[in-house]
Length: 173
Image (cartoon, rainbow, N blue to C red; front, side, top):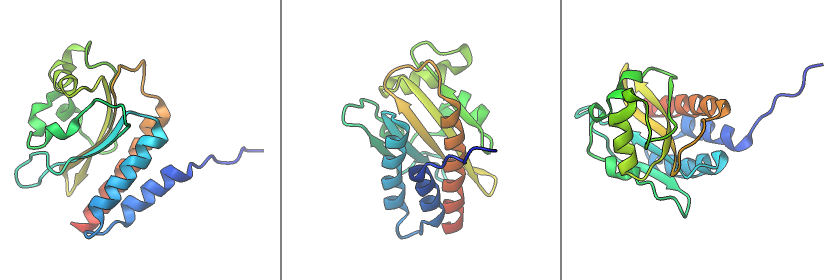
């Protein structure tokens, strides 16, 4: 006999909310669900970085953080994805990218790691999403400290939530 499928109600709610959001409530829905995502994953911060389709710059960054979190991804507002060559080289639909330690990154991550480290972020898990074939945003989890690893269930969760966010944004744009 097969065991029952595990279903996390909070994570399911996040995915459904992202898919059902409207243009009128998108910022509120994203903000509220970033907080739920942060709580569900027990990370220091969860954030959304939309990419402006005209300029290619990061715009309207939203962050949910724990009370003691020191990371400040909002400072990326106005920057370009070009400033993150490692991440940009890895952007593809449903591809999750992880940086376990921004203080001691792999050689190919050094430019990106320096930027995250300056923001007070010690580790980051990211998924990019696309609308009409163009990079439209990033969804991320961040920790103030390095991590030994980002568990596989977090990678799968980011794929689910990231694709739901992409679906919702594409529907309202």
